[in-house]
Length: 357
Image (cartoon, rainbow, N blue to C red; front, side, top):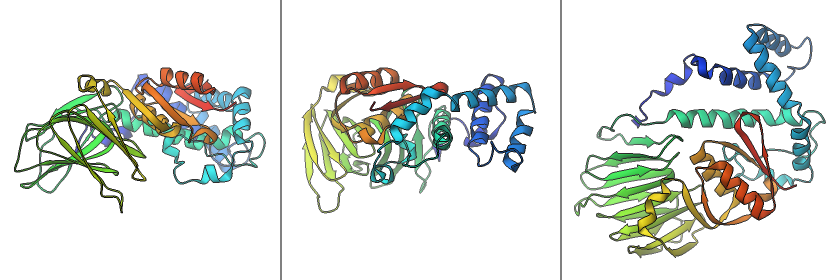
């Protein structure tokens, strides 16, 4: 069961008039990414011409996308990024399209730089649209044997009360599922940040799991953050036991109020102090990275700001330190670009590119 307030099947309905222009732009981008669409006589070319002739709005959308794909400045950026990018960087399994990383390979035919880029661009746009659908309107109902999923949209943080009286507050773009039994209260945080005010229940401890950690509490107030390559836990009230989930590690730490810990995918554990009174700032998008890889920071920005960001693979593993509001993509990327000596390009259709000149 998913608490979203809107059935996902609604996304298949005809767009509202206010959204029609964006809907047609997405369709035009999809058409122009197809093989042979620019070759007269090819079946895709003929079908695209038929689509353009359906209405003036269709033709205008096609013109806008064609102008974007033919923009010389954008092609210049792609040529720079394509030049001397190691194949191993692009092929690395961590360089997933959903993270917005460029999937460029040496040797692309001249004049088709933008065309090769449009398919992952469309994918990122679809991810953003789906994320915006996930907004809550109803309280989840507990059903035996069926975990209940809660997924926050990119517009605002949300708060929900669980059947045991615990309160969970999810940051923008965060996603979790919960399942309560007679012996345990289990929460799985799939992505993003959640602040939990856990109801006191000695008989049923609460266990919050991420890929990197298991957090066990009886009753307390704490925050858990799950990024792609690390998890963070910080405690405002009570005691929390954090265990590593990496095979061969098994280390556990006990956190008191004002203490925090981060656990990476490789099992590296770092302790740090936190200000419990500022815990709610996490819901507003404020994060401290000390340190983190640039691609992990970008993933957090994409998740909370709902923006599509394309990252130069050459700088994906650059070490970043600082405090950023990841719910504000423009401010965060501008600050990173300025301090790290990078270039930031604002593309049409709300896309951003961060690259090394």
